[in-house]
Image (cartoon, rainbow, N blue to C red; front, side, top):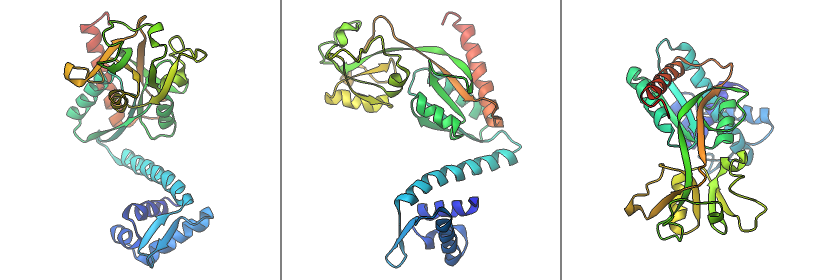
Length: 301
């Protein structure tokens, strides 16, 4: 497929019509229409339904599928061109990450990178390990913060120094809210939201016995903030890392750590044998400097 025609198709969808897209692209409406028709012939499907004498366009099912992929392709090509032609440390870094307190040092390194190179921009993508690995494999993310353990055979990585302690988030009126620790027995019959990635990694197997009828996983989540709203609404409790949700006295929420401790470790990963951009290399230098400084001041952590 012609990249330029894919770009014009994406623009047509985003602008909502041939006339607006043609004006933005500075080509004639007839030329743009012919390009869309050529693309439809190439894929063997109608992509756009024309209404109101052609003034209104709506994506068909096939059109929605192609638009999603075309948008990714156009974005990758645009990024590649910028990376190849730029002599400066500049451009975009796409960072996919789970919600973890260990993101703190990553954020500090990102800030160091931008302070040294003001034309670098970071784009954050929330997800869980399996989703993040797909983003890395597809080239849609330059770096990913992965919760361990996962198969790292296809990636290079840096271990992040922080460890994150898991616990149970609950309303402050919950019967378990006055506990100092939560044991496995305490979790029986407690409706729980758990991280989606934790189920795929099976690293809650010692805590959640699927064969026990009294184990009640009532849902999964990627974003702890959204889960906290469910907790406040009374839907259930949530297994989350400590420190990412406000549990101050006025929050109406309480975090109680699991006992024995369930510790989460994470790393920053990128695709092996894939050249990094100058911006990516600068970011890794800043992260390594932050980690070395942390290890010097807190050697036992």
